[in-house]
Image (cartoon, rainbow, N blue to C red):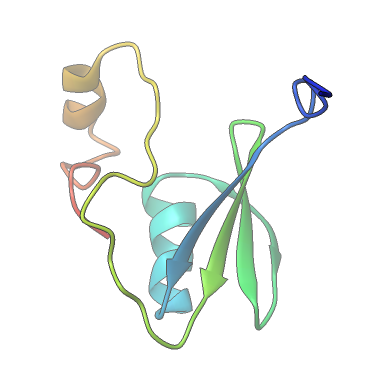
Length: 92
């Protein structure tokens, strides 16, 4: 059995949206991620060196669990940051 074939490869994170303009604003403006590319299929962001692909879908069935998160040093400080304005703890 082969092991470790993807161990040194970067992962790509996927989320979906039915509202690409709203998603673009949220990920770029609210979270400050750099938009790498945009087409009719997806918005692609650089999320701290990880590719985040926001797939544009016709119908969305929201997950009942966390699908995406960030590791931060101090969640309280991050939430209170004036740039966050409390918007980071919100379902999108």
